[in-house]
Length: 574
Image (cartoon, rainbow, N blue to C red; front, side, top):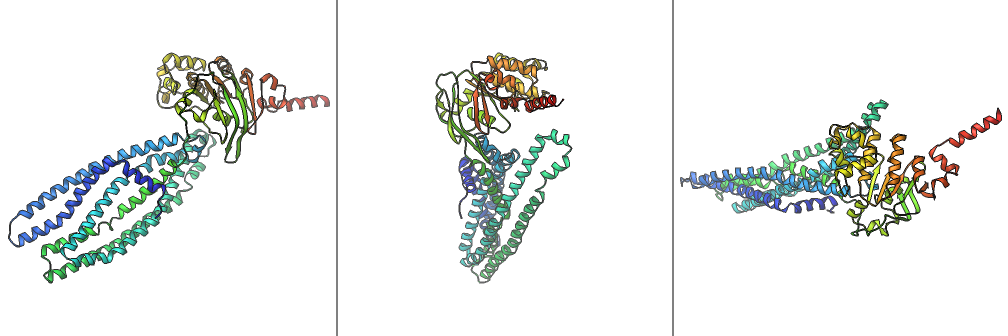
């Protein structure tokens, strides 16, 4: 059988928890040893009583029962603790990998699907450890029982071995058929979760449009396929149980019948007949654990979904630190390709340290991609971005995060207070720095009006869209880096607020500023404007110089020149 990434992940999981594995295996081995000794002691006790030889074997049998009960309790305590510890490690690895993937790669897995993999499939993957211990225990008990049958009488072991190949074929066929079904079942669950998260994120839009029934139908469109996959899975398990219930008793009857013949023949004692019956059931244990095989198939399917995320490429980082410098950015032959073609193509720009440039262009022209590449969020397919002479790809993750601050159109906040949200990622999080950043972003006044001010939990603060953007801007201003990038971060603020913020941004000369904007006032305050069109730089010049061009003016006021032409034509007619 060819090993897959899921199989390798399961093996790594078993190796990762070697301490727990050792403890769990020790408990399992104790249980297996006790189980193997039990029929022999039972046989000795029966023969001892029939022969009137005392109570020694009976006393040992009672002590063994107590030991088996203690081992069972230990197993019930150790197994869940082992799984929870391993689940924590797998989830940490999966979350770390997901957060270090490239920004463009994160669209591969929907948020709901990734959440399902993180919460559900990691647990299924970690369950392989107790399953492994259970399988090892079954193997030891079955093998030991087969040896015990051979010791009692070789014909008993032969009677058992005759039916073993058929049982092996039944189990192998079940695992081969049920694994793809479980993979499909989990994939459908992930798709449904992804659509659910998508709808809940945009619930206001859905309710405003009155499309709740259509969205419910879209979320559950795969439900019939999910039902079919689940029903087929349980049908296969039912078939396994049916075949096992037919085959296993036949094998046990064959062993017991052979033992009865040996008893009549005088080859074994009555106690050994009872022991042979018990050992026959134990030897069948490896073939009769339909639940274990089902759980193993589920663990393999869950591991496949976890491995799909872990096998994606992480954003590589170097180990270099930045030298002292003003924050000069150099974009050389920058090309970024998307699923439908180039997003940026051959972009060359030089941004002097401490300067402010505005990035403008029509929707879909590549403005946000340019900003993301300039700040290291997106790795170019070709070309390079240098910050003070050092390629961004050679910087360590810490050096890059410390050098570049961000503000986005839709800022997302972590749990915590407003002050913590503003200071998030900043080199220094002193209260004065946070308040000064709030003042620059025109957020200080409405934050101070809250009962707890900057100590107000974000989850309980009733912010409007513009206020949220200002908190995001304050986060950017609080960052003590040499580059500050704003990706349409003023789109939801009013004109008066925008005037104050753009002035503060103009005076923020300790950082090189790249501002993606649709606002003419922001472009007018910039030192130069990068005019992007169809992934290329159409012009890179001061705003006053570009304003002479009709196409440039139309970026900020579409239809203005057309209306002027219509008015002139109308005046000629009149």
